[in-house]
Length: 144
Image: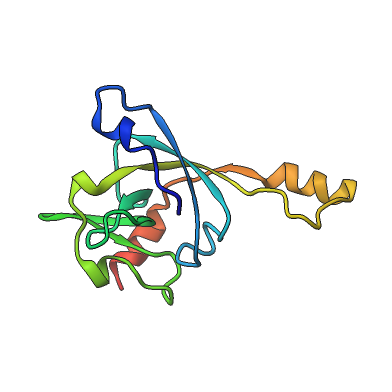
């Protein structure tokens, strides 16, 4: 996942939105490798939201996870793909200062082989979608 702008995070002029790219399978089926994300900085975070955060042990690495619950020490985040790992089960709760923003929109880029008018139409109808909080997913994730 590419690095977000450091300048906006530190200064007074934090932009309301940021961009990121998904790498890896941890959020399948919600997000896929190569998806582009629009995230909202300083948005209210609730269980079920998909967020972008700095990895607690490697802070130059950004990760995308779903918020399962609020704990005393921070947010408990989990991957939608239970086989991918790399979430709070590995590194514990994530403090607020490592959360960069809530994912607002997912955009899937056009694949190189999608050239026919029908393929382009299908892509256009499904390329950009909002990423909603899934209350049922958060209950399911807490049960793990």
